[in-house]
Image (cartoon, rainbow, N blue to C red; front, side, top):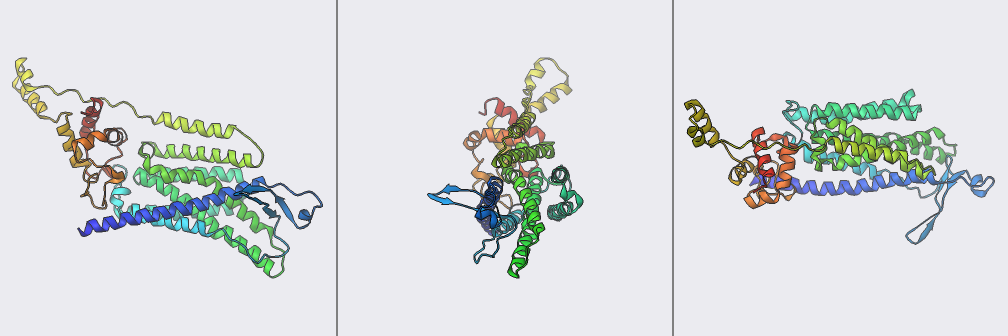
Length: 426
């Protein structure tokens, strides 16, 4: 009972922190999208106009919610520091903190089920957690050093190098952790780069600008340029991170033999599509970018499409072997085959009960689960028939379930489920 209450409490914590993470993530990414759009959409004021004399580099007019807005951007800073200055930082910090909490609640608290796959690497709990946390530290360190190196002055080349680094990290993680954990840690690594940009570069640069103005000095424009560069990086990171956030629902991607390559293609597609919108906001329509992005996604979908499962051959009956005048040895073998499980509901329910219902039941017996994942229960024949499509997809096609194969389902049992399903799931 105590274990059940702990699992139940963790599930509520999971729900509330996930909700917070979603809310703050929307606020942060929404701000990122808006300000990159704003930077790309503003137009310079007329030469000699009052705005130009004030140092305004661009402005635009917009209407929203029944009101008119006229945002203006200064080339470096206004002549006087305003009394009320809003800082965009807490959205980023709250998103990362809630996401980091999610890593502990979902993955580190139940690492044996969520992070470790013995078929991939024989790690213990602390080794798996160490790999996860180390990824965040190494990811930010490498990224920040690259940005501060001479390579940081060449945005295009820096982007290519960073893409290759992220792909390399995905390759390593998918050979150390379960596919689902590998994906989420690639996302957490990118998210750490994003919040590191805010915490370590963007906000400190803005503070330098404000401090200079507060003592009557002219701000150094280098801080604004660095902040703008990292802000643009964050903008291109958003679509890949958003995909990774929802990827745990799609085992066809993270459970594939080449899951790292699939993620590499999807990240590239996200960046291409984001680039199209950034160019479009600046007045350039380059339709080739979204076409390339969609083509990549289509290629991935075709490449990982499930192959038909070959049904298990019908089991020969012992009496048929005897009637045919077979040898005693053959008769004995046939008798053993006749006793083997067949693809009927009785045997399927037995397999599901042993391998799946430990989690997918009203009262799960698998540690770490208080309720059936996704509300799917597989305790009765009717429930099994109801979810036959999901069982076939997750247990036979993708082999994503059971998680980390904690219940040790065999290939023969998966094949038997496949035969039952293709025979009509009766």
